[in-house]
Image (cartoon, rainbow, N blue to C red; front, side, top):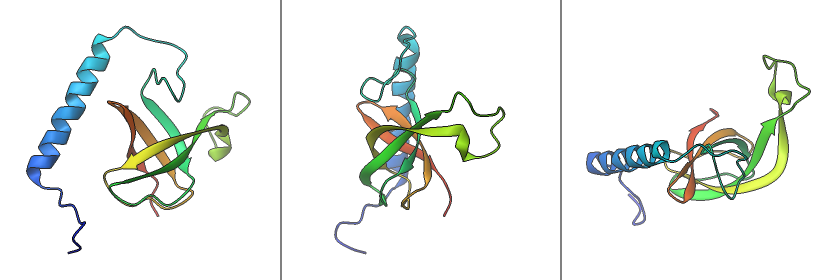
Length: 120
């Protein structure tokens, strides 16, 4: 195993789970806010596409996508979403993510975390 490898053991997973629960609990206590932006996330989730490959335990650029007001509902394909031209720096904890993959990112205590990614 390389010297810079990181082992995700049970203790680390439990610690991360507690951190996420605490963050969610704190978010529920705050009054609802409107007008989410990349720099001031109100709802804490964004959908985007990776602009570059992002390795596990690293961060990379994600283009933020938003709903196209003229698209059909329910969405027939990815044209339902438009590139907002906003970008975020997102951290990949769970695995490698290739370039151009759809991702769901969550705001967690000061940074964007990729919580779900499109399969290869």
